[in-house]
Amino acid sequence: MSHAFFRSIFRVLPLLLVLSPVNSSSCTMGNKTAEIRVKYENILSHDIDELVNMSAEYRDRCCKNKKHEHSKVFFCNDTQEIESLQSMACNMLKFFNKQKISKEFRWKAALVSCGTLQVLQCKCERHKKEKVCTQVNTHNNEDRETGEQSKKKCNHEFCELKENISSLRSCWNKFEKIISR
Amino acid sequence: MAVPAAFLAPVLLLCGLGPRLAAAHGPTGVECVLFNEEYMTCLWGSRETLTTNYSLYYWYENRSPVVECKRYLWDRGVSIGCHFNQSEIVQFQPFHVLLNASLNGQALEIRSKRMELQDLVKPGAPVNLTIRNMSSNQLQLTWSSPYPKAQCLEHAVKYKSNKDTSWIEHGVKGDIFSFPSVDYEKYYTFYVRSKINSYCGSTQLWSEWSVPVVWGRNTTSLAEEQLQWFWIHTVLVPIASCLLLLVLVVLLVRMERVWVILMPRIPNPSKNFDELFITHNGNFQEWAGVPKDMLESFKPNYSESICYVSELPSRESHDPQWDGSNRPPGGPGAPAGPREHSPYQNNYVGV
Image (cartoon, rainbow over the protein chains, first blue to last red):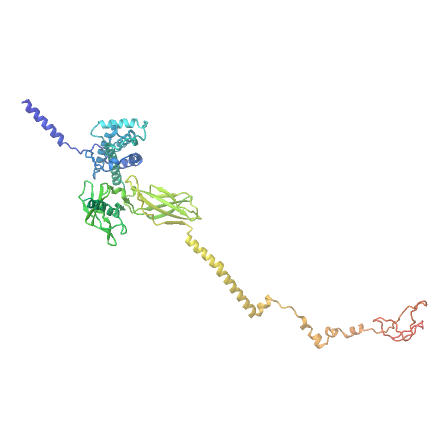
């Protein structure tokens, strides 16, 4: 009898998890587009530009012809720009601990991710990733070895991060265009 | 057997290189530009560079199926590009293009790199440039843009005065440009152009320069004014002066009264003396009307003999004595008076 009880419980719980809404946004700044615009234009856009420029300086020959099967592709969906930005920013945080990528580049990418989450007042599904933001914001001016990436070989993780950065910037451009008059 | 093989090798090599050689004379890439987000053109060459007609196929990554271009652009019978309507344009979706052609039975394919159409936007040139005079020698230049999202634009203003040799360019974020100090003696020309700013895209495509707006002393009117003054000073004034002179000359000749005023006659008093010389025969006293008794009073009524006095010569001198044959030296004023006896009887006074 007890076996039947537990089996029934264990079937319901996964069902509840599957049926729970996945697309619920945990961002709270959704309606305050003016405030988002000010923060983006005055602060975040400059960090994004710096990150893009940094990304362009590194060797990326291995990224051009390969299509990485395991790379997660993010789209900036129409009418869901904030959610798309949230997904991109949270995903970018996973590169913070990738040792094959230069520390300076990883930190800058994490800074932009955390900045995006902060402007949009979003949280990531995995709360561990937000510890990264605490670390990044606390040790923002820590000396890091510059030019390190130029010594590192082009690798899959670097290509994936570069792709993420490009998608994040494009999504911000799209969002800015929508909320601008 | 070696000989056919020797022939085959270069043939095979050429066959392998054929498509590449054909492609080398074909398009090197596709250039797409979104004009003011109203339409888009993708060009892959010109009549001079293309050897065959290409077909264009496009798709948006993970969005649409592959579609062929509906409106080709032609240059003297050769397709050189494709025109896209606004409804066929989707920004913020990776865009891919494939060119397809057949040359000598071989298929040619040229794939473009992935494009982000929001980074290929070329806004329309700014319009309605207006200059306003502000206080303290300041000018304010404003304009409007045909691009629908004005807040996604950044602008550049270039200007020059008629005394400058090169243009000065300034970046402007809004749609107002303040010119701090203006010289009222100069003539300024302003141009404006626009670009999508970094908040809304990542593009290097500037719009065309706007129609210029000018401010200051218009060189055209100044030139016309100077030309007018030139005509006045150099032509009209001399002509008018000559005409005036001519009129004066004619007046002088025709009107004696004017001539007399300008060239007074030298007085000739002879007329006043006609009566003297004609009627009175030069007799001034008669003409003057001097009374006769006064005239008589001037006549002498006595006679007076002239007494000649001379010095007797000394005996020692050999001067001949005067006798009747010698005439005494007499001056011209010596009056010829009658002979008179004198106490010196030896003296002889003759005429």
